[in-house]
Length: 351
Image (cartoon, rainbow, N blue to C red; front, top):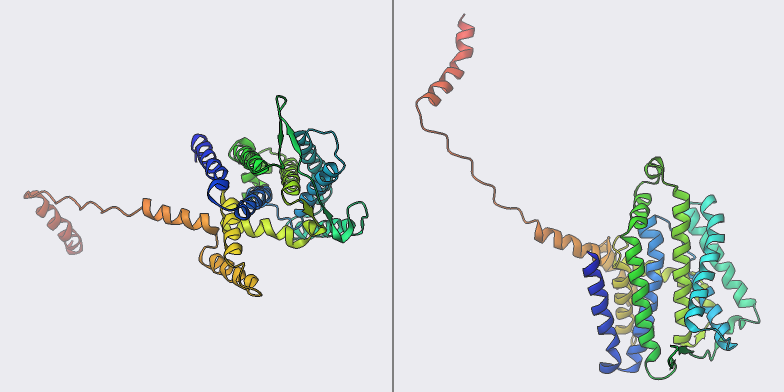
């Protein structure tokens, strides 16, 4: 997909989503906002898995760090511009990602990396659960939505659908930036590392440095998603850092297609749609969701986007009718040459 088509796709999607408050209920608008945040979270994880070849099971730790840092700043009414606060939260996630990545990426890979990151996420989950300042197991509630200083006026994000529209714009900008990064020079290097790290290193690429860069960007985006999540729900708990929360972006990315940039977005939307459709099935919702996901994975192992790509390829590469062989020219020399070729072995044998 070209850059112009990608930008057009993002703009059309934002316009459709921004119009949601005018044609649907506030409950649906709230769920769409959660889906947007989860989509950004899934994109950050898939930067590691789908484009760098790193499997992590503790990615929710960075999401929780961003969520709790934003909650503390908003509850304390810190005199910080909200955009600066979000930038600071992303920077905090990047710094933590560098510190963690310098340790885990040098000492583990593959399933060992996944288990190690899952252990770090569970450690953070336990620390939050025992922290009095962070509300322990009860979490933090009553988190206010900020006012956005636009220099000429103040936009109250707690009024009406202002924060929802703010979410649409920020999530679109983050997705566009990740798309630009993924299909640029850095993204090409990351994909080469994902396919064959040894050959990429032989070409002179510092594989460890690029893996750390991918880990840092993914942690920063995950923390930013957590910072957007806090004012939207206004209540957070230590469950944001547990293993189940880390599994959510994995399921979304695999459902939509980890090898496609937009796969995690599609998977997040489908997962939210299935959850919403089964909300009235008391006690059976999780079972139905699991069966639906299992069927999708069995039918489309490469995700929904992979299945659509295969169908599109089959349709565009339909076998054309093979041209018939040209008829042999009708002259007297051709049959004679053929007859001579058949009689040659006989003559040689007779000699």
